[in-house]
Amino acid sequence: MAETFDIAIVGAGLAGLVAATEAADLGRRVLVLEQEGRQSLGGQAFWSLGGLFLVDTPEQRRLGIRDSHELASSDWVATAGFDRPEDHWPRRWAEAYVAFAAGEKRSWLTAMGLKLFPVVGWAERGNGDGTQGNSVPRFHITWGTGPGVLEPFLRRVAVHEATGRIVLRFRHRVDALVRMEGAITGVSGTMLAETSVGRGQSSSREVVGDFAITAGAVIVAAGGIGGDQGLVRQNWPSRLGSPPAQMLTGVPAHVDGRMLAIGESAGARLINRDRMWHYVEGITNYAPIWPGHGIRILPGPSSLWLDGTGARLPDRLYPGADTLGQLTHLRRTGHDHSWFVLDQQIIRKEFALSGSEQNPDLTGRDWRLVLRRAIGNKAPGPVEAFKAKGADFIVTDDLAALAAGMERLTPDAPVGEAALRQALAARDDSLASGTDAQSVAIARARGYLTERLIRVAKPHALLGQRNGPLIAVKLHILTRKTLGGLETDLGARVLGADGVPIAGLYAAGEAAGFGGGGMHGYRALEGTFLGGCLFSGRIAGRAAAGAV
Ligand SMILES: Cc1cc2nc3c(=O)[nH]c(=O)nc-3n(C[C@H](O)[C@H](O)[C@H](O)COP(=O)(O)OP(=O)(O)OC[C@H]3O[C@@H](n4cnc5c(N)ncnc54)[C@H](O)[C@@H]3O)c2cc1C
Image (cartoon, rainbow, N blue to C red; front, side, top):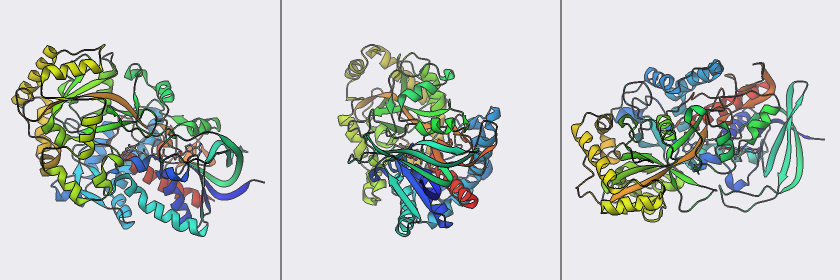
């Protein structure tokens, strides 16, 4: 006979762990099934930068940033671009989530011991015209990055594990949701062979047994599709042109999307599967952890951005402005790659790398290391390491050598020294004029003290200056987030094809499009993914606990 629990949760990422702790706090007996080994507990969140979208916080106010629930709501709606009938629940989740980010989110997290880095970052900067992007800085980095976000929940899980209220089973892969008389009554799956691979590395899929579990409720918290380039290409929307032939992978292989298809075959409605959030500033990791591992540069606004033909991107698409706009533009150029061209002064301040392991100062909560970001001529250690070892970096004092290096990396699409010089000169001229969108964005950013001190270089010409070596970086498209997912109502109940909740089935985190089946619409304001897991995991855990 199948073992019985009050609640079974598929996936021990952030959303699954939040749901488990909330349900266990309410006295339910919870089983968490995870296909990876214990060493990968926490899923993607461990690797994340721990950036959280928060609105009107003491951190913002201390820096003179004036934010409000209303401003954040209007930024969200403008950026999401909801335009489909199936955006009904995503819209409602978006409203609820922004209210959470402007309300209880910060106090709930800090009461559990989470601490925020006092400098608020500015992601998806937009053009300051309210048509898209964050009007003000809102990206709050967790002190301790992704592991720091997980910490309070791992602590709570450990307490419940000790009493047996939460049971974690690793190397248990769910292959089916059991449906009887219309209701989900449990899960079944295969046991995978023990593994000793490192955290985040691909593990074997050798099957050593099977299992079946009966549960009063099942919560799917199994992540998105970004680890499977085949699925990404299959779901690639034609409005973005053809899918890239070559791209990097920004998430571990366990982000395999299998559970979405399993949910669908059990009758759940999967919506907005063509909405995805991939980055255009990916670089090849010289020390990969998972297959095709790429790292995202979180760029400041000053680099020159050239497409694969050597043409400058429109100035409104300056670095850090509009991820989807840039992706749409670049997919029309006929090339999978593009280029940042910059100098030492810009890289030093403006290249941040996304990922806990790329930010040892913030992850290790080391103030001494953090302060080094503000002094000297060098970029942070991990950025300097990419300069020295990264396959996509060309660093030289000489423009001809820079062009030759670029040609070596893309022999089929040479930019050439003359065209490069012309593009740099045009960029320098337009920045000197101070009127193009890129210079306006730089000035807008430098209006904030912290942006000026550690994030945005003083405007300067790239040609004929002595600001350290010139640098060209070949950029790749990098898979990351799945914006669509299992459609859920505001109680995290998964809806069937007829729009009616399927009894016993809930979804949370990336598997649920971070709430509703896609609360971001087409575009994200950033820092909203971890937050979406926290919010939807909390709702799913409480709702399932209330129902069983
Ligand atoms: C490098 C990096 C940086 C990031 N930075 C940020 C940031 O700063 N801010 C932000 O908001 N977001 C960020 N994100 C995104 C964010 O981390 C993820 O969207 C979020 O953690 C997803 O959590 P999840 O619990 O929904 O899914 P996951 O973390 O993917 O966890 C799902 C778990 O389910 C398991 N699973 C899947 N299928 C099955 C099955 N059939 N049976 C059993 N187990 C299964 C998987 O193995 C996995 O452990 C970043 C992501 C990465 C990779």
